Image 1 (cartoon, rainbow over the protein chains, first blue to last red):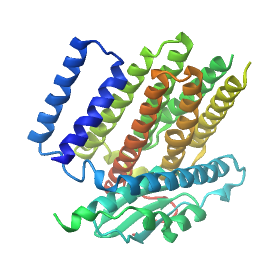
Image 2 (cartoon, chains in turn brown, blue, purple; image 1 turned 60 degrees about the horizontal axis):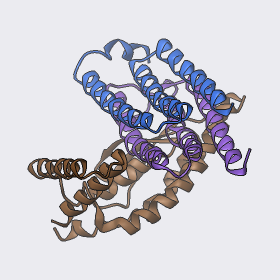
Image 3 (cartoon, rainbow over the protein chains, first blue to last red; image 1 turned 180 degrees about the horizontal axis):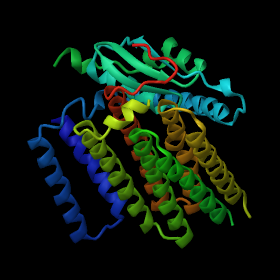
Length: 161
Length: 92
Length: 102
């Protein structure tokens, strides 16, 4: 239930930001569309702790702050590789890494973060092994070190469903 | 003045993506280039909003980003379930 | 020409420069999997700087909130699209030409 309320609140804020209206009629229409969307989402059974992970919001904020740093660093590496005139500036290779994540949600968050950082793209996920394509040795090493892996907030609700 | 410069830069980058779309060689290169072309279109629409001084353009940009994503996923589904990519395998 | 205007100019020119460099990468990189990374630059840092510059241009209005929303949306969708593309290419048997291991 708390996921439904949280989704409703975020939908309401989204509606208000996108429209910017405050007239009673339009506000009523907005409330109606939010409720309709909530009804549809409940009918689809799409509201749970995976689609709406409010239980890890603070951990996610810390993780995102770290992710932004990683993204900027790896962007600079890729840009250097693009502009370098040498042919051996890139060492593209595939690698398999074992993830520390145990929950599905944690694995998906990690794989998406690896894809989001330029220089590494996650290709396939089998069990707890991730197939990654890396552009340079440095970006591949960053995945092997697994610093992001340690920072993914733990999915506490997965343990006690 | 900076807005015009930024517009030219986006058009040049779009030209690069378009060239990659035409050059290929695999169908995945083309889809990747089209997707990146779409992202640049979102930026261009937002820039047009700054040109006109109206925030209304940004709604269109947001909608374009949505459609771009859905089109991308639809294309992936199509190429996965068809024999579209058969010829490219021989080249790679 | 105030300081805030100068900041918008700086962010926009950085974003435009990155767009062009990433476009060069899209053309210059030798193989599909390497080009994925060039497209990743466009979706993250280049788009981020560009939209931040535009947000500064709009000033503290609803417009800059919408620009932030566009950026957040790009951040959510781009890895999904990128991964879908890479997974489909991998499943269809596309490999790096130099090393055909696995």
